[in-house]
Image (cartoon, rainbow, N blue to C red; front, side):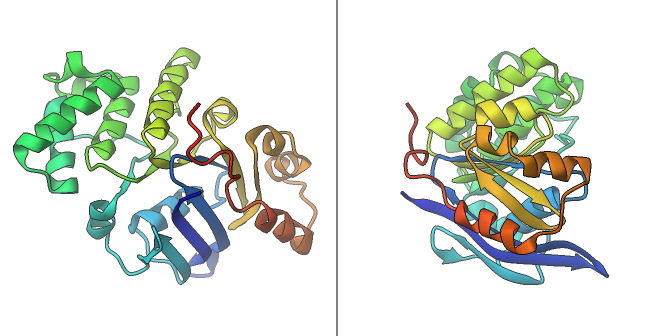
Length: 265
């Protein structure tokens, strides 16, 4: 098992609001870790900490065993951490091709020729080859989300952070996103995926982590987590306070199962 990303006791506050209190997890190479939780649980903040957009108050964050706590956003992108955002924000007056080219040249430092080859490989994956000359501002929501993923992939990440890429899509469009994520996983990229569309958590992840009140409450196989009373309690707001028990559950299943990491069959 090869661990590509590890977080230990990550905490961050904004004034008196303790958004993340103590979040720990590991991500395996070629593993998809889904993250669920109610609004305000700290999910997007967690991704922003990993990407370097926000600096945590304490904790440890390592990439392939290397301490990256003090790395900037640009430094993290260069070593292999890519991210998407809840609301796709491509350069609307640039073409689909030009948007991906920016990611390859500035995110990965590729020459223009090498970047061009990389972009065409990405088009085959995200299904936008036939729209490469279209302006990004004219794309449908599904295609903007595809482009968002493509721009992140252009930097050749080893870890990809997905923030609600299925949000606002129809059932058939969600299926298209699931196919793209499956192909990315197959290439060996580790993925952390925040989503409210729970279908994606059941069918597109290896493990699911439940985040609530700034802590990871539960982590394990998707079907077990989604059927757990903890999920119902947290979403309904009736969770009983049992910190010791919850912490034990979270830490006991913090690591990926041997059979999940790198298993693409």
